[in-house]
Image (cartoon, rainbow, N blue to C red; front, side, top):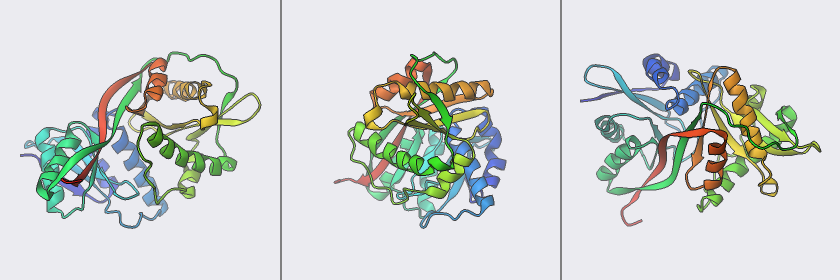
Length: 300
């Protein structure tokens, strides 16, 4: 039977699971980058969001080998659990362990089928059912295909761009839901200016500037973890879409990631065929399907 260890300190988690994360750094990109950010924020004294029960979990097989990870670090309700790829029995054990911990759990995100197995274990015990809120897909770029040229250039965001970046990060979340036919979900923790200031200071936010000097597009990326850099979000305001800004900007950021010796990856919403086509034309190929799942009452 698999065993599970729950850890509150991200440094302890990396000590326990770092070798496992590094063995498949592409599929581990979310866990690795979010945990690395948590280490930095803890060191800087950043306060945790109110109501967040933050933890990481390490799943081991009967020989003591790490076979999967999970975490609860999302900063806003419903504080979903993120589940990495793991064997079915480990994912089911995770669901049972969460119930035993008394966790109030209504949302599970992550790799399929592990995330669904975990969610269904909880749903069975609580009299609920599992529904898919969003299908996502992880892509990796091995060799860049050059997009068609467009006017302008990629510039690194500065402190003067923080307010614009916050506004466009927020707009990305709303527009992504609408483009996929979903009702946008209000986020009580939007407009997090200090977090954006840290991103910009780290040089991880870029803007595409057209030949008239207008900011027309935003692309961001996480710091690399185990040689993988996760790009996103990628946002073009509605009035500027269809002009090739996204393809040009993502291509340039991807080129820089490759030149640094790292592997660029990104997520897409499977319900948005436009963005999927943009990245596939650049040479991005699918790695794994994931989903954001909700546990709802049976009669809902």
